[in-house]
Length: 303
Image (cartoon, rainbow, N blue to C red):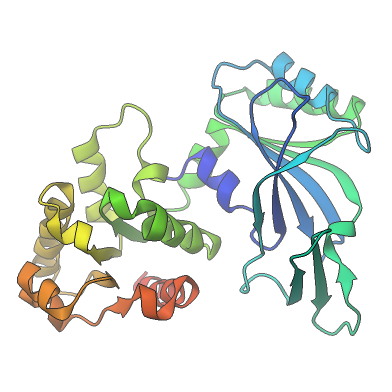
């Protein structure tokens, strides 16, 4: 099941995402400025991890945001919009000052994306849980401060996730999380293909075995990241593989989508001879976008 942080990370994939920090604002949060070329509008989105905050805390935070005055600094770089959702072309000028130009389909002119004027729209993603009445009151308070607020909390995430049953289970060794597993999970989410991925799908205090087994039973496909780390891991990775292989036998259909990451045919054969009979794709040879495109097609066609 998706959580509020996952939605913060994957929403608005059609916009240029600039990670920023507010050094003069006390409330700890992750913040991005999103530049929407189609609407010619820029807006702010923030993720607040502290689950104990009150509506007054959020109101104080909003009161510190002054358009044209608040100083922000770059933090963690820039994420370009996905090709599937951005209807145009981009030119990135990695010089000082950094510039991004865009050209929408059918428009002969190139424009400066980072020069788009900011709107008063603010999206707050919070690990707290407010009532509908509290959210409505907070929106009124935000409007008085000059903000058009959309508040998304734990209740929002639960209601939305109920309608987004995971289609793919991502089985991986934790040492491959940064390099392969997380990029695949985020990429598929941006393609509107919900996934079961431990960082997104395991809330604090969840029963690990039950959650994994439920994910393995419910998902349409299992994305198996075959790496040296996975092959040498005889713990959860091996158990997940055995579970999905047993389900293949039970349902008499192919469920595994192997992603090869720095392994040879001999190594895969030594791990499981049957895996060589399943067409896999090479992460290092094809790259993230093509690998995720093929996973998306294979997964959604099985939905």
